[in-house]
Image (cartoon, rainbow, N blue to C red; front, side, top):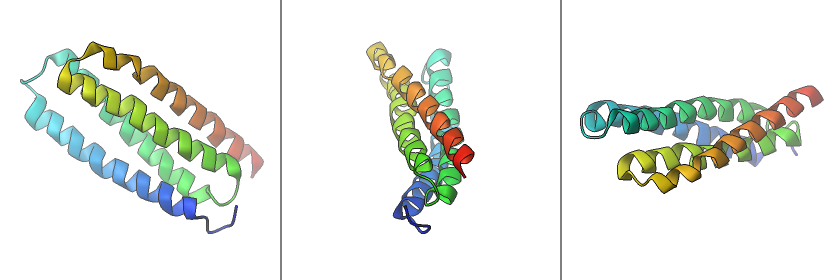
Length: 126
């Protein structure tokens, strides 16, 4: 991996977009969903937003190191997968009420955990 990796650009952009949409989705939940969905579904939606925000910040960390060690690349990939599977499954669950969507969420959680392990390995290698 080169020191100016194209992955730095992509992970940085994904992190910044994730933060933008996390704030937008959080505002949507607070101003539109409140009172329109059950408190349990609102909590699920807000959990998706929270984890999207945390892992979007993690993507910015990954972006700053992506060219230095391959493990940072893997961390970024797993963070993106985790956001899609975890957060977006919770958004879909809260908006549709289709309980079977909840089966996707743990795979996103596992992706987050894998990303954290690769982030750890990356830092131990540099």
